[in-house]
Structure formats: structure tokens, C-alpha cells
Amino acid sequence: MSSLVVVGVQWGDEGKGKVVDLLAREADIIVRFQGGNNAGHTLVVGGKKTIVRLIPSGVLHAGKICVIGNGVVIDPQVLVEEIDTLQQQGCLSEASLLKISETAHLIMPYHKAIDLARERLRGEGRIGTTGRGIGPTYEDKMARVGIRIIDLLDEHVFREKLTHNLQEKNIYLGAILKEQALDYDQIFDGYCRLRDRLAPYVTNTSRYLHQEITRGRKVLFEGAQGTMLDVDHGTYPYVTSSNTIAGAVCAGVGIAPQQINGVIGISKAYTTRVGSGPFPTELLGPEGEKLRRDGGEFGTVTGRPRRCGWFDAVVARTAARLNGINSIALTKIDVLSGFPTLRVCTAYGYQGQHYDEVPASARILEQLTPIYEELPGWSERLTDLRSLDALPLTARRYVERIEQLVGVPVKMISVGAGREETILIRPSFF
Ligand code: IMP
Image 1 (spheres, helix red, strand yellow):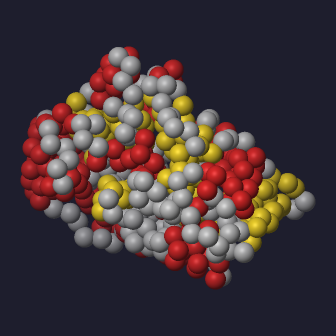
Image 2 (cartoon, rainbow, N blue to C red; image 1 turned 180 degrees about the vertical axis):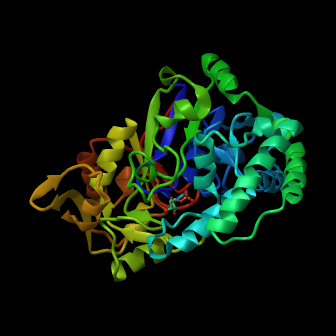
């Protein structure tokens, strides 16, 4: 296989960063195709923690090429800061190691202001966005008034687009959202400075990837967020504003469907979600508290406590079908140590109906009853284990049951945050 997609099975935060970092050893090129700096991928190498938000998680491997595709929305300030931090750590030593799509859209200061103000006004009905301006930027892209990297590179075009957009946005910010107007010169000067920093990396990444895939180079596409946050297939309206499923790769980088060979789904051994929205297997009592504490379940980007619950096979089954997942990487199984009994949701019940996939209605999702199966837990610490055989029998049974319920084999098990804290059932994924 020469090109693989990695996607989140649940509501994001499944540990994609760690898995991509591991798979990147075998890859030549690692690519982001959607989302923006609402994602935060945590990498732990040799005990040292690095968080990347925009640059693909393969960046810590020397000599690998990282690509930010056209489907990503870019906050140039965040990207420049990330490049600086990574360069201080000895990464991205040459400009050729990072390629940014010329047609990716820019997050502008008014997008962030609108995102934050709308959430404030929504009150109880808020989506719980990350407040990074992601939604408003995708809105402008679809409304065909977005500003792309290529527009920033042409000062004349940038001036025109910014002038037009800012006039409209300032009226909206003031009259509807009751916010301060933003200053044109400040934005223009700041973005021109950032443009000079980013210009060396900008290219036609669609064409570049086509050429490299044709040459047989191994490419890893790194999804952000998770399947249940997909704007079309997730728990709408409590979703992000991009398509997060594997099918989004083609549009998000500009390659053909035939150029994708496999899909790996990353799933936590339990479930978490940040922000608002339905969460059928959520645990509101001490069991949820234990998962949050033992799993360190606090948002990478916003620091918010994550909502925690049992593994939901309905969610995973739906994600397996939507993405065409060939294998699962099951993460954070070590966090489940110490529960005498574990529960796994096998289906949903609602007014006498039985659901084996996630229903589209948010109202049904909020009112349904999860149908659980109980499995015996284990008390042993799993973090030092490196083979399937070394796992307690009950943990192996738990993994096997997940495979049966989802219909996809588990090929990698993560037992800790570190790169080496992994049980590899399949030695190679490419
Ligand atoms: P937005 O993407 O900032 O617009 O937020 C929309 C929803 O997606 C909110 O519930 C966020 O908490 C969630 N979300 C966005 N990015 C991530 C992520 O990387 N991990 C988990 N949840 C996310």
C-alpha cells in the first residue's frame, strides 16, 4: 500500500497524533486534509511532550515531508508560531520539509471574533466550539468570500478582499453581535508580515502529491477531529464545520479516490467528547470521573474537561462503514485498569425500535437508551506490556469483543502516551 488514511472513530481526541507519529516512521509524506487549529495532537517522545495543531504529527521524524492540504483552514499566526517552536526543537530544518497548499483558506481575526461572540450569545444552546474561528472560516469559503493563501501572496488581491470583507464583518460584529469593530491596518500589516514568513512553504500541493503517489512514495493522510464530528455524518449540529471522514481526503488535498489504499480508524477503548451534544454512553458519576482522571481527559487546545463514557460499538460500527476502516488502533486501554466490570454499548433502543447505527435525529440521540453488555475488567497495569499475549485474559476478551461488535480487526493497541508504549499486532501498515 502506498497511501493510508488515519481517521478518528469517535468525537475526536482518540490519540491520532500518537498513531500518526508511529506510522510516520514508515511514511515519506504526512498530510493534513481538513480542520484547523481546533485540533491539538499530543506527541510524547522520550518523555518529552510536543503539541501540534496544524502541522502533521509526523513532523518529529527527521526528513519526512509534511503537507497542509487545501481543505485545512489556516491561522497564519498559529502556524508561524508552530514552525518557530518546532525549528527550535531541531525539526523542519529546511523549507522543503513543509508544504502548504496555495488554496487553503485563512482564518482571519474577524472569524475568531465572530466564533467567540456567537457562542457567548447562544448561551445554553452553545455548540462548545474551540473558539478558533474554524466555523466562520468554512462559512466564508462556501460563501465564496474566503481569503486563500494565494490571495495573501498577491498584495493587491489581499487588500481588495480584506477591505470588502472587513466592511461587512464590522457591521455584523457591531450591529448583531455587539462587538467592537476590527482595525483594517492592524490586520493588513500583521498578515503581510506573516505572509513573508509562510511564502517559502506555499505550493501546489495537489499536484505535488499526485506526482509523489505516482512515484510510489508512501503517504499518510492524518485526519483531525473524529467521524461523529463530521458536518454531514456526525451528531449535527454539534459537529465541526468540515468533513472529517476518509472520503474528505480527495477534496481536501486534490487527489483521486483510486489513490487511497487503506483506512485506519483510531478509537479509544472507551469514549470521550468535548463541547455540547448528545453522548449516549456518557458517565456522569464516579466512573466517568475515574476515566477523566486516569486518562488525563482534558482538552489539548482549550484545557476543557472532556466528557467520558463507555465504549460505544454503535458509534464505532457507523464509523467503520462510513470510512471503510480496514483496521483499528485501539488507544488508552491502560486507562480501563481497575474497573471490576466494564460495559460496552452494543445497540440503542428508542420507543421499541432497535438501532445498530447512529440515528440522524439529535432528539432521538438524546433520548435513546444504550443497550449494554457487561464484560469482566482487570486490575493489572498495562503500560509496560508489549505483546497481545502479555495482556490479562479479560483485556484480550475485551479487545476481541470490540472486534466482533465493530466487524474490524484491532491491529494496534496503545497502552500509554509514549511512542514505545504500544502493542503492534500488525508489524507494518503500508
Ligand atoms: P469547532 O471545530 O471549533 O467549530 O468546534 C465544534 C465542535 O467540535 C465542538 O464540540 C468542539 O469541542 C469539537 N472539536 C473541534 N475540534 C476538536 C478536536 O480536535 N477534538 C475534539 N473535539 C473537537
